[in-house]
Each structure stands twice: as C-alpha cells, then as structure tokens.
View 1 (cartoon, rainbow, N blue to C red):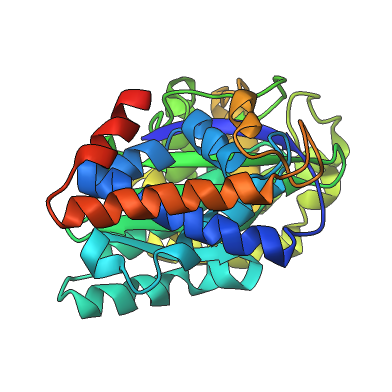
View 2: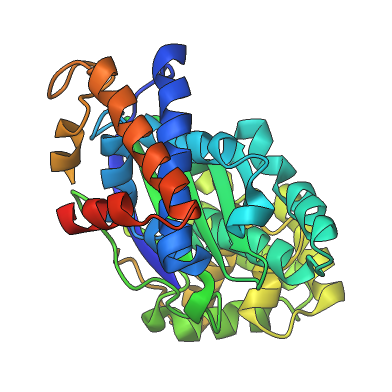
Length: 352
C-alpha cells in the first residue's frame, strides 16, 4: 500500500558534518526507543507515514520544507542503526543515487545474515520503484530509494523523485503490510501542495487501459509501430504527458519485439520486464486509447522544527547544546530501561 506523497522545494547541498553526526545519534536513540516500546513493525509503519517522517526530520534539525530532508533522514537512520540491525530487528538498504542501485545486493546481504530468502523483498523493492517511475508518471525522476524491512519480511519504502523544471522534489511512501497488488490503487493518500496532470496507470479508473496495454503486447511489433506513426502526424491530446519525439518507432520496435516474445499475462508482469520504462508505458496507453478508447487516469509538520532548530536557521539556528541534551536524555533512559529501571522511559512517555 502506498501511504502517501509529499512535495518539497528542491534544495541542493547537504547537512554540515557537525549536524549530521548529531542526527545519526538522535535517530539511533529514537529508533531504539520505538522498536523496544512498540516493535520493529511499528517503526516501519511510522516511517511510511509522510507526516511522521517529515516531523522526524524537523526534530532532527533539518529544514522542515527542504527536499534534502528525505535523503538526510534516511541516511542518518541507516548510519545510526548500523551494527544494531539484528538487535533492533530493522534493516535499511539503498539510499541516494548510486546507493539506490545497490538496494538488491544490500537486501540479499542482510537476508544472508538472518538466513532468509530475499527474493520477495528484492521484488517489492524493484516493483515499488518501477510503479513510481513508469506506471505513475508525474514528471519526477527517481533518484533516491530506501528500503526498510524486518526479519519477518514486513517492509516499507521511502523514495524521492526530482523535477528540475518546477524545482520541486516529490517523496513517495510505501507500506508493504497490505499490498495485494502493485498495480491496482496501491496508494491510500496523496499529500502535496498542488494537483498536476499525471499519467496514473495504477488508478482504479485505469483498469481497462491496463488490460488493453497488456493485450497489445501480444500483437506483432509492426502493427504497434504503425499506430505510433499515426501519432506523429496527429496533434496529441493535451492531457497526455507525451511529446512526439518520445514515440520514436526505432527505439520502441526493439522493446515491442521483446514484449511479444514474452507475452506478459498482466500489467504487473508487463512493467516488471527489464527495459519497460515510462516511454513504453506511455506508448501502450496511447495506442490503447486510440484503438479501444480506454483512457488512463490523470488524477492525481513544521511544528517539530522548533525542537532543535533548522539547518538554515529556520525557525532558529540549531541549538547544539539542547540537541546534545536530547540525545543524552534518550541514551540514559534506554540504558536505565535495559537494567530494569523504566522510570525515565515512563517519564518520556508521559511527556508524549
């Protein structure tokens, strides 16, 4: 189940070392408290909530409205729990850029250490990324993918796309707890400032388009290319985020041939095939509308920043002394709780 989406202004740069080191420490203590009090599954549920995640970023001292909160918070959590994965029962793979491409191998590495088959987790990681990059086309190119999971196979995803044109980043949250089908309305909420024209092939309204797009892959490539050439001489409908140059017959012929040979039985299998990307999905959806008339769908917590301040001085510069005190309070409470004295932990709970 996709839990939600958050839109954030695109900010460049990174957290200064003095802040990131504190973020790692505080993120670790928070993860320890939540997993010990509520279990690793509840920690993943919280991470999958875009509002809770944003609040965590604010509490850690990052800018409440910056796109960098996604990569930095995920990085702080991953570094913070390093070495404690087995103890906490949570494992974090992936990250930004090149690190995102290592997600499958990192999942496999963790699974080897706990004697678990990684196949279903690797598939969930790949499909969540494929859906948000190819099946849901909103103009945001994914550049960050972080996969969280437990020993029992409970998982969540936090990934982010970038749009250089409007200078916004969009964050996508997934919760695997209730995923029964990756391509039929996997999201339960969208949280953003504006509504844009989006090709959404996983909406309920796109069911006919999904079916016919899959059916089209059984046709000979020459037949599909003939339809593509029609679009090059027609004025494309404004609601399609497609440019004529995107529909290059030479580029599409190869993948259409591959699809015809593979004959995927449903849309999930279709987008799961290596090489099937946004252009292929757009082309098939257009041909589907041309032939069958089936149109795809085109619908589409700042107060926590007062805890320690923000990186860029909003609402005030990070108070290092106060930040270090918060880390120490949590660390001492956790240490006391491990020795059987839960008084400090209970006090923190009452504050909540």
